[in-house]
Length: 326
Image (cartoon, rainbow, N blue to C red):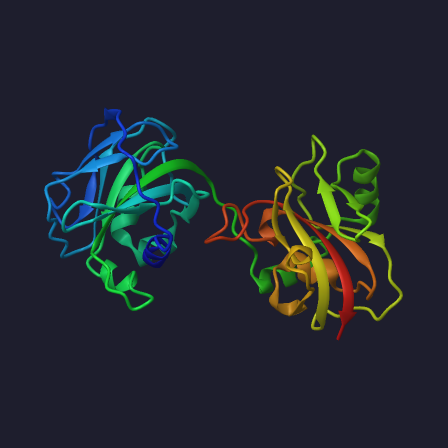
């Protein structure tokens, strides 16, 4: 979590002043009283708040405090939040940057967070969506100095945007066990039924050979991995332990937005099939070189929901064009 916050400041976006209401402060954890002077004015959820405090703040221990109480859903154990934040210099209160122009980050409020950062966990658990949480730790300067340039101690004001139940990605062992039980892949008959009902992503290839994907209305996250061969090749079959060279397009099943495309990069990717997400491992195993395949992955066979870091969240669809297998 600490590294995520620090690294997210690599591209700073400076703020304009904003106005709005002041919320009530809530519970705190860690260094006592360090955030007592913090005042936050919130305009809306799309704009970084205006933050004031009596500088300098002497950060000697990890600390977190709800400095503006929201009125949305309550964050529960095992759920994940999405958030954006603004970072300030603890020495003089100046704004260092914010992430409001970027996509929201996700953070699971789980036992793992409790072990890694018990102070932040304690304050997040039970907080309400819309809350603004002041957060700091004494080694923030070291964590944010990845390029060797000295950075000031940071105070982050985290804006809790949403909370939802967490779907974690299956581990390789879990996926293998599910596959051995026959509960990983959707049957070909069920895939054909969805296709006939118009409930699968629609794939078209342009004259240049680049695919596009349309997500029809009513398409839902599948319970199992969907594999549809769009065009069968006549090359060697890919083993679960093999290596594949392929062009691919990845889109969100929820809105059809593209999150990755080797076509855009202009060259195929090569990777061991055993080292990718389970939806790829078991969706491509057995497919032949020269094949074009549609994969529709439930969240647990992709990166989870929400996903960690910059990985795409939720169910995903891929068009994969297998060029070579080893």
